Image (spheres, rainbow, N blue to C red):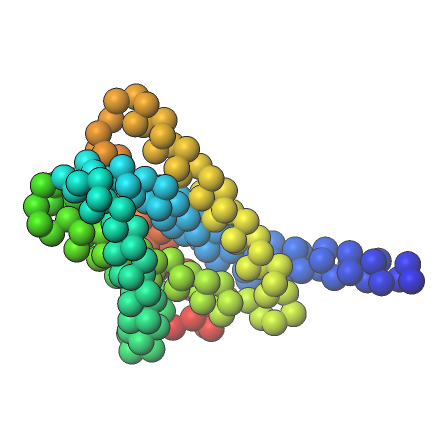
Length: 207
């Protein structure tokens, strides 16, 4: 019976060693970095959507629907991202989606008070969630089956750290007196970095 835990431990050590090998080390760092930034941006947005909506000029009644519109956009974004990836490649598609996300966030102030503010939340759900989910596909394709679980787990662990720090940083910035539009401009940077880093992940298994 004691052989089973020993074999599992040995397998885990081998898997980690493979991740640290010259073949996968740089790609693992890039994937972890992309997920860290994407998680941070996504969780910031999800955590602050009601506040962002009211800041954007929506009444409290309409602000409640901002999250729903965001998730509807996410549904279509994930579907379209899958189709687009089959045509132009996964890395390019993710970079495009996250690049558009950064542009929308950086120019959010332009739409404050306009009738298009709910549409912007829908578009953000479309591009950010579409690009974010695509990163899971990158992770699955990056590693061979024998240590794929370990590789994906480490990358997602790094991403979850970003998911914790993103909303917390947003709260700190708001506490310092920064406006919501200024926060949006700041968090446009990790969205853009996530797209750029993903584009430069290299693997024969990733288009």
